Amino acid sequence: MERGDIKQSVALGFLAGYVDTLGFVGLFGLFTAHVTGNFVLIGRALIEPSQTIAIKLLVFPVFILFVALARLAILHWERSGGMALRNSFLFQLFTMLATVLCAWQAAPVVEASAPLTLLTGALCAGAMAVQNTYGKLLLGKVAATTVMTGNVTTLVIEMVDSLRGDRDAIGRCKKLAWPVFAFTVGCLSGGVAFMLAGFHGLLLPCVILAWLAAAAKD
Image (tube, rainbow, N blue to C red; front, side):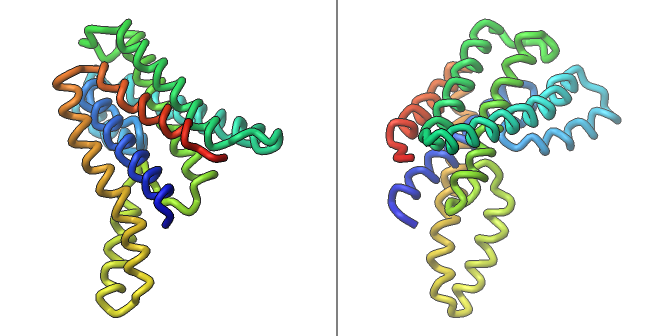
């Protein structure tokens, strides 16, 4: 794994954990980076009714929409010779900036079903849908940066294999360990950031995405 790939993997892993946790704390238990987690919360709401169910129901179709939009955009950039990865970072950046602006307009966020609160959650999930999409399509050599279950499972398997004498497994462990570690740090940081700065904390992911876009070579 090249140094540039490691930096990118760490930055994206941190960003996903950070946004997911900040959104969970600030948006009434909403998962934005891995929306399937919301299915559990929807199931819980069936036996423990909650006013926060609307935002979780809204996010899944929005996530699908942004995955589709990102896929179409990447196809266009690849066919036209555009810098697909850089443009994907910029797409996510603009969506994240829209999330920040919407959150500022929604403040104080005290009602889960308020229109601006719903829009904030939808835009945030949309931004993370873009990351999920270009991660699958353009970063095939990099470990997943938004959902860690598969990474952790594979990491443990590779650790066992390395202990059994597989030298190549050590290199694969390094590839997986970085995004897992970064995601964990991002989760811890996202919770603290919301306590200290509220939704202003989402400006940090915007800075990271701007840096990634500027550093992208394709």
